[in-house]
Length: 210
Image (cartoon, rainbow, N blue to C red):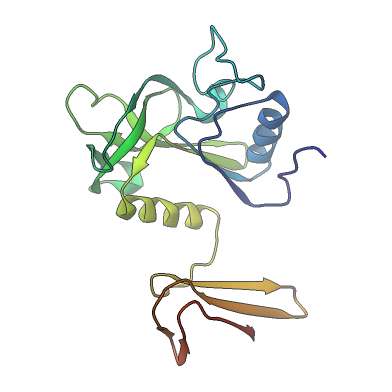
C-alpha cells in the first residue's frame, strides 16, 4: 500500500530521518494544495537505504520546500541548553531549547525563532514557508513546553482550527457530520477534572451528542 496523506489538513513528521522520493513528492503536493506540514530537526538525513547521501544539503530534497539549509547540528544532553528568541508573530517571546538542534540558514523562509547564544545568533531555530496554498514549519530544535504550546497555537490558527480551552490533560474532540456529531471528553489525568458543569473521574471518558 502506498503512502496516503491527502485525507488530512495537517501532518506532523517528527524526526523523519529517512527520506524517499515517493514521500517527498507527496509532501510537496500536499503543501502546494493547501496542507500544513510540521517537520523537526533530524528530518530527511538519510535515504531509503539508510545511507547519508553525499553531496546533498540537509534536509535532503526538502531545501526548496522548507526554504532553508541546515549548516551544522549539535547534540545536547539538557532540555534547557540554550536561549531562543522570537521574531515576527512571536516578537518579544523568549524561551529555551535543548536536546538537539539544527543550525538553520534561511533562504526564503520566515524566521519565527532564532538562537540567542553566543556564536549562533545568525542561525534560525524555527521557520515557516508558504508554498502554493500551504505551509511548511521547520522546528529545528527541542523547545520548552511554553514555546511549543505557543507555536502549536499559531499552527492551529494558520489551519483555521477551532481551539477549545480546557484544563491541562483534558482532551475534547468533536467528530461526525452535518447530520450527527458527538463530542468526546477524555481525562488523561490521574486526578478528577471539571469542564463547565461536567466532572470526569481520573482517566474517565464521556461521549455526548454535540
